[in-house]
Image 1: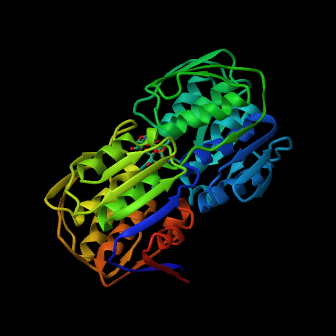
Image 2 (image 1 turned 60 degrees about the vertical axis):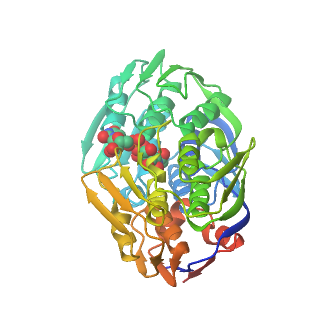
Image 3 (image 1 turned 90 degrees about the horizontal axis):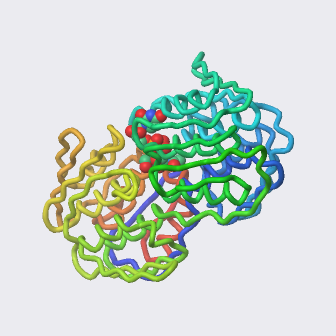
Length: 416
Ligand code: UD1
């Protein structure tokens, strides 16, 4: 199993390019199931999760051709409606084939994702929404089995804001009969990017990016081309690395308009930030100031940025309070950060971090995707050597992270 070895110290300098967004690419790949004709995607990040999703779609019979960041998909010859446990257990986002399969082919059998390191993460809202649209759903033997003749448009009010839930229901509604309204919809930019791709395929969608999405079902969607939006979490991770380690870095290929909460917190931490249409320049010349934050659905502070800011707080001046409101068990990285000498007290869903001028390198274990990113940041500012084990978590969602950081001057290498 690969590990990362990091020698801490030294500021970061240079330029780094952000890849396409994992959380936009995954649902948009699934949208290929809805169309007759080729879906051509550009700026698709080269990640394990993307490879897993492509493998799943191929198992269903989708023809895919991939060259670098370009993926062309064609769902003309679907041969299966089943997403097996072996794939779903490695990537919860596999549930995103449920809505498209039942909407287009009238049948789907998708394994229940089960728990994961950061919490329970049920899919009851996906199921409830599809049932409201007329799908007959049974949960048996660990699988969600859905059938429908043609889904019917309806009024859906989700109990909580769910990103993939909104995406699954929005995709299903594009081929339903009549109008579907999704209230309490997720407003994440990735939902908006999916809507953009679906509209290019001929879907009639209004209100994506707000909490009320209205979809008029159509008989059929076609092929289209679409460029996947920039990864705001990857961009934010590089910015946090600079906030912790100091230096000056230009982040290109970014979409700063999707990152306001993160950028606001970085400014509070003392970073100087300049923005262009698709770039962000960050300069950090002193020790960061600790920040308080509370995760919330977009446009609130992203839970996927929480671990990285915890790492910044570990070396900041003062005390920062971090409250996690989206996932019940998303502080696993705190225990690993403590192995690096961080002072963190956890009470319920709040972590109080008292900054220390220095951390000390140690061997730590990555526990989930974003936790790993927090550990990489901490390793870059810790004295001596830090080894991060189980970095397959990192590879799920970051493209060549160690190479990109090395180009900025970090002493980081992969050991196989
Ligand atoms: C997506 C993102 C993930 C991010 C998360 C929150 C993708 C592929 N993943 O995950 O990176 O951390 O949004 O921004 O886009 N819930 C239920 N029932 C449901 C659905 C959700 O109880 O049917 C709960 C979850 O357990 C969680 C909360 O709602 O507590 C939000 O989860 P959700 O937005 O659905 O997360 P994902 O879409 O899985």
